[in-house]
Length: 275
Image 1 (cartoon, one colour):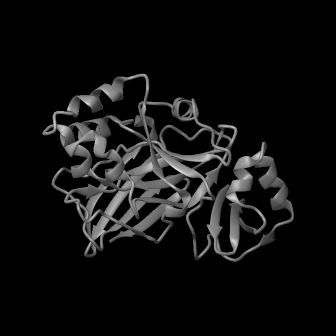
Image 2 (cartoon, helix red, strand yellow):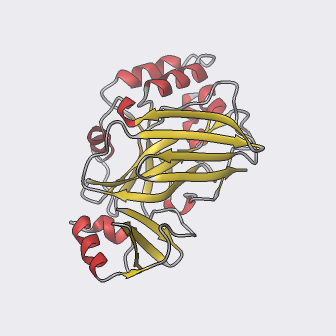
C-alpha cells in the first residue's frame, strides 16, 4: 500500500485503486496501536479518486521529528574520511563505522521538510554540497517500523569535513531535507536487494548517476531504531534516514537549477530542484 499526502488529505493506493482518506492523518496513523487494521477499515468505505497517483503531492509526514543515521554504508565511511583528512578527524568515521553505537543526529522538524517537486538548497557558505539518497524508516509511537519512504539528506561536505562539530550546520538548514513521494505501508521487512538510485541532471544532461541496494547497509533497521529510542520517546512516531551508499565523486558539487531524482524500488521517485 502506498500512502500519499495531498492538499485534500491522504490518498491510499492499493490493489489498483486510489482511495481518499480525508479524515486520516499521519499523526493519527502512527499513534494507532494497529495502523494496518486502521487503514484496512478506512479503505472499506473510502471513495475512489481518479488517477493512479495524485497530481499534487505534499511531503508524506505529519508532525514527526526527522532523525538520521550516518556512516552506515562502507561508501559513506570512505567519503566522510576523505572529507576530514585535512582536519585530522578522519579516524572518527572509521571508528564509528565499526563501533557498537551508531552515529545518530537530528535532521529536521516536520515543518521544514520539503516534498516532491519542492526546492532543496545548498548553503550559501558551502562550496561542496551533495544530495544523499536514503531509505527512510517510518516508525510509529510504539517503535514499530510501519513503512518506508524516499529521503534526500542534503549535505555540505566541506563544512562537515572541516570539523565534525560542524555537522549540525552541514546537515540542518532551510531546504536540507526532502521526503516523498509516498510512504510504502507494509508489515513486512523490506527486501535486502531493494535498489536505490540517484540521478542528477544539469542543463538537460545527466551530471551524475549512481545506484546501490539496501543490502549493502552495515546496520540492521531494528538496531538503528533501538538506539534511536533508547533514551528518547516519540509520542507521534518518528522518521529515520538510514544513511547513504551513493556519494558523487569528490570533484562534484551541486549547482542551482540541478534536478535531483532519487528512486527506491516499490516506493517511487522523489524529484527536487536545487536552489
